[in-house]
Structure formats: structure tokens, C-alpha cells
Amino acid sequence: MRRAVSALLRKDLQLELRAPQAVPAMALFSITTLVVFHFAIQRGQVEGDLAAGVLWVTLLFAAMLGTSRLFVADHEEGGLDGFLLAPVDRTALLVAKAISMFSYLVVVEIVAVPAFAIMLLGPTPGAGALAQLVLVLVLADAGVALVGTMVGALAVQTRARDLLVPLLALPLLIPVVIAAAKATTPLLAASAGDVEARWLLILGLYDLVFGLLAYAVFDFLVED
Amino acid sequence: MEAAPAIELEGLTRRYGERVALRDVTLSLPYGATLVVFGPNGAGKSTLLRILATLLRPHAGTARVLGRDLPGEGWAVRGSVGLLGHAPLLYRDLTGRENLAYHARLHGVGLDRAEALLEQVGLATRAQDKVHTYSRGMVQRLAVCRAVLHDPQLLLLDEPRANLDPAAREIVEPLIGAASGRTRVITSHDPAGGLADADVALGLRDGSAALLAPVREVDPAQVGALYR
Image (cartoon, rainbow over all chains, first blue to last red; front, side):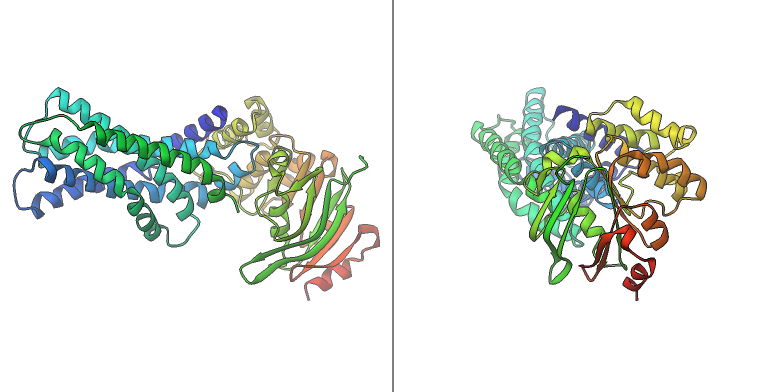
């Protein structure tokens, strides 16, 4: 299993570095969306719940782009069949793709979150708030990556991939958006507070439930 | 040769929606033998190969490959089957060497085997180039390397010599030809060449077996009739 995951990750990294598909599109989309928000909400700076909403809507829609592209190279060039012919557990593909998607999100956030702070955020979060924000991002990214991997595997087999991904993924990710936005709100408020533990718990529980669900159904999504 | 057949199909049927791609196909092929499959485009040849490769599930009938029932025991067959289909199953933005290394890791095969195959098919000097810079013949040679990388017992070859010039055909012959000693299923549109390369002939028309006989009993004209 570890050997297959490592082979898949290595291949995905080589492909993304050689012919970037997901990360540049996601990063550019994030920045563009933040610029549009900057003009659309008609105020120089945002904070609290509005700031959290803007941040998570931007990241979530960027994640949809990554999800649409997650299996494209494998599907178009027959790589998925190449993997299915190998005597390895199909779960290796789930794990590798979820790790790839998680990594894409982290890279995009390294660009998008500072851009958000510069363009839109009023208060400057302290070190404590930043550390908590990283924790929220990690927990939310794990959920987005798991759901994105399942939906991406299903959608890539259809011609309406770009339509199907948001239609399937966004409703499934509503709990992540709610919990992540609620958790982030005090961190981006003028009088900075701490994350409420229950939202972190909900994000962790979501990751666990969708991790188990993905493990249970992934074989059926990629096999005939 | 072993007593049990390498491939045993009984009433094999596969549909795509309403269309029946493969209808009630029954055959048996011993270990080490070669089955050549003829038939016009859309007759079900590729579907048959994909079922044998465990990539498609039959909708009716039974398929037993290398002593294992499909699809239930497909996991046990996968490491012993090599598929060379119309798609090369290679990543165009990876180099030839990277592609083989990826498949070698998936199959638990040493990278020295990949290097030896690259040398054998004459691609060692181009191994560092991306696959999208290769000619179609070079891609086919690399796909042959990928298909035999894990030394499969059963080779499933969909028009394997397409895109290959005579010199390249000679190069890949030891890997996918009769001398490889593997059980083989080959699709072909060349009656004389296909019959000369096989032990048993299967002719498909509209998914049904219109011809099934040892090649010594088959006249090339019978194969030609499948296409009319």
C-alpha cells in the first residue's frame, strides 16, 4: 500500500511540476475572486464573520477547480486503467489523490490567505490567531480533499465533469463551510478571540466520517 | 502445459446500456496457447480483452482466468496479466523512463528491469525525453515495455503491431511473440498474419462468436467473411 501511494504521489508531483494543471488555476482563481470581492462589497476592509465568509467562499470555489482537474491526466491518458491493472489496493489511489488535493490546497492557501489579508482584512491577526487559523485550515482542507477525491473520481468519468463537481461537492461541503467560517470568525475579528472548540470538533468529526465513507465506496467509484 | 485452461469463458455477455457488446461467448484456451480474435470494428474484441484484464465486469456468464473467477477474484489475477490496448496507458508529460518507473513501483518490479526493457526495444537513448515527443511507433514500443514489465503470464494484445515498422516488429517479437512463452489473446484484422501467429481463432460479429476453431481448421476466407 505504502509503495503504491508513494508511486502515485511521485507521479502526480512530477505531472503537476511538468505540466501544471491544478495549482496555478486554483491560485489565480483565488486571487481574482479576492479582487472581485474587494470591489463588490464596496468597503476597504472586512472583519469577523464577513471576512471569514469571504475567505471560505474563495477557498472553496478554488477547491472546485482542483477537484475537476484531480483525475484528468489519469483519465485522458489511460493512467487510471494502468493503475487498475496493478496488483495494489485501490485505497492507495484514494490516499494518494487525497494527499495530492490536500497539498494543492495548502499551496493555494499559502498564496491566497496573505493576499486576502493584504487586500481585504482589516485587523491584523496575532501569532496565536494565526496558529489557530492554520489548525482550522488543516482540518477543513482534509475534509475538502476527501470529498474532492470522491467527487473527482466520479465526475471524471462523465462528460459534464465541470458541472458535476460543484453540483455534487458543494452540498457535501456545506458542513465544512459552516464550521470553518464559524471557527475562523473570532480569529479575524477586530477584538481577536479564540476558536470555539466545538467547531474544531465538528471539522474533525466530518473528516473522520468522510474518511471512512471514502474508504468504503472508493473501489466502486473507480471500478467498472 | 497445465491441465486446467488459462482462460475459460462460459456464456460471457457484456452490455453498454442497451447495446450488447459481447453476447454469449464460450471458449477455452490452454496455458501457453495463443487465441487470435478477428472481427470488424465494434464487434466486441476490445470489450473481451478488457473483461479478461479485469477492467470490465461481465453482465452474464462466467469468466475464469488463470484459475481465478472474474470479477470476484480479479485482485489475484491483476499482477499476472499484461494489457496492450489502443491507449498506451502512458503519461505524455512524463519521460519514457519515468513512465516505466511508475509502473515498476506499482507492480513491485525493480527499476533495472525497466532499464533492460528500454535497452531491448531501442529506447534507452530517448528514455529521458517526454513521451509526447515520441513517434507513434516509439510510443507503441514503450507501451510494449509497460505491458510486459511485470513478466505477466497472460498477455492481452489489441492489434499490438499497429504503428510498428518491420524493424520495430522484430524488436518487440521476443517480448510479445509466440517465443515469449506466455498465454496470449491477440486481436487482429490481418487473417493470414493472425492465423499464423495463433493456435485458436475466434471470429466476433456483433458481439457473438461467429467462428471458433483451431487455426489449422480455419481458412483465411472464413475470417474475411466476418468483415462482409
